[in-house]
Amino acid sequence: PVAKPVAAETPAPVAKAAVVPPPRFALQLLRAGRCLLLVELPTGERFQTRDPAYMLLKDMLRAAGLPDSPQIVGDPVRWPLLVRGNMDQGPDAARDFVQGFVSARLEDEPCVCLWLIGLPAVRFAGEANAEAWYRELQVEGLGSVWALPGLELLMEEPQRKADVWQAMRRLMARWKSTDE
Image 1 (cartoon, rainbow, N blue to C red):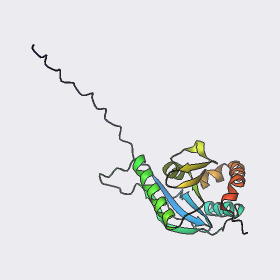
Image 2: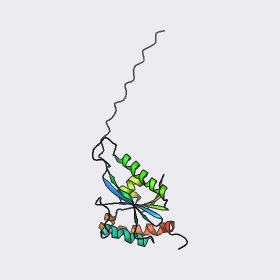
Image 3: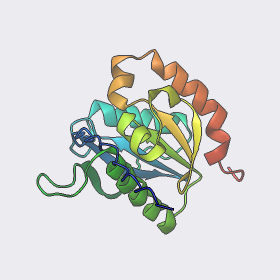
Image 4: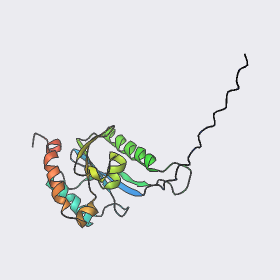
């Protein structure tokens, strides 16, 4: 019997993935009591003590019963890391980097709740989006996180503060120690 030649399967054309420009953001990690806060830096620069966004953050910490002078933990995370180069700096790489950075800080000193303040923090540490605001999420490697709108947005749309306050009242038991 004569074997029929096997038709070579033509590989499906590989669709060129659209090149996604790297996301641009700056985040600062802060510690307040038993919580860590990963906060979007709207200007890309560290907070100044008289900065309205920083003053709002201090008010939020006071309302939460936490120390209102948070400690800076490390340098701000700025993305993209490099202006030039072939390194992948897309959204997935940004997420891996931010989660790795925060995870390493958590190993140094654990926290009971990680606040993610601002869309870049929620997106790249919490793997979520604006629909997750005001909610507590579980993130592998990071534990319990609380997703919040950015400080600038809270100043532009003050009605959102009520939602923050309601969510905060539900979560406060997490970071309030029982010996107070």
